[in-house]
Amino acid sequence: MTTPVVGTSSPPVCPVSGVTRVTTPTGDSAWLATGYELVRELFADPSLGRSHPAPETAARLGESAFSGGPIGDFDTEFADHARMRTLLAPHFTAKRMRALRPRVEQLTTELLDAIEAQGAPADLQADLALPLPLLVICELLGVPYADRNRFRRWVDAIGNVTDRAVVEQGVGELFAYCLHLVGEKRREPGDDVVSRLCAVEGVTDDEIATHAMVLLFAGHETSAVQIGVGARMLLENPDQWRLLHERPTLVHSAVEELLRACDASSLPRYARGDLTIGETAIPAGDLVLLGIASANHDPSVFTEPEHVDITRQQAAHFLFGYGPRYCLGAPLARIELQVAFGQLVARFPGMTLAVDPASLTERDEVFTGGLTALPVQW
Image (cartoon, rainbow, N blue to C red; front, side):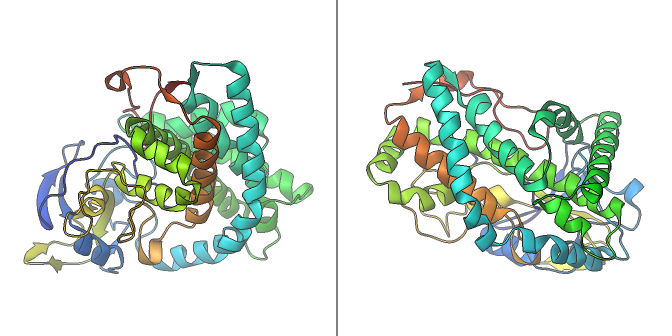
């Protein structure tokens, strides 16, 4: 799954398309690729990969496990990626996700019932954005929801951008948890993804546990962040909130626009050999950052890209990636977002922020970002 960082609702205007030498937060040198057409081209370029022949010396974007630096085996990266998609894709098809939609609707209704019963003010981040994708991914993987506080700590540790020791401990503990889960599913299989993977011949417990760990992380963390960020953008653009309430069929384009408009971090890639991007020579092993936010805000592709327009029907965004690495979880994320925003706006047409927008803070210690809280009233 692709796990872009999602943050502020007011990203900068796209710079000129091209490749620029930059310095990452770790102090390493990298190349930043910007502009819609260039980022799309590089997404599908086999000259770039996620692995590195000498990962211990590779330039890094941060310390987090999934986005900080190289991952995978350099010699077998593409074969390993193809095997992963072969194993997991059948469990995340659009058809299978559509069948899940009624359950997502039920869970969302229950969460909004609780918010309404509690009364204003409420924290949408804690009361909707986080629990909804957590509940869904737990059911999909066969993970006990009662364990959420345990693996949430590990998820936060894995995403830490500054402390490698914290990251390594989080990875170890979450992997051990998932390995134990695999053992339980082999003994008592259920109707869930982990159980179905256990039934595939030739797949080891370690392999299943690794996939479960990634799915548990990516399958709820980025959706939780995006529900909060998207709700904030709608609340900060009350004309768009009202429009969605008046025309609920716009929820599909609204979700795509909120995904486009958010500030997504650059995705790391490594040059697998010497290559040239435009007129710039990139040496083998160099870190190349795909500027997702710049691509999604390219004014040559998106009219007034800094504005949120839920009726927008322009080019596709890159928040879920593009090409061979397009996010397997995109159909699930879209359903969660469509249901969450659709029900939220219908249920609370007069909802507003309960605090000054300037007082909202984001988590800067984890690469996925996201709001610490989203206080609302109605």
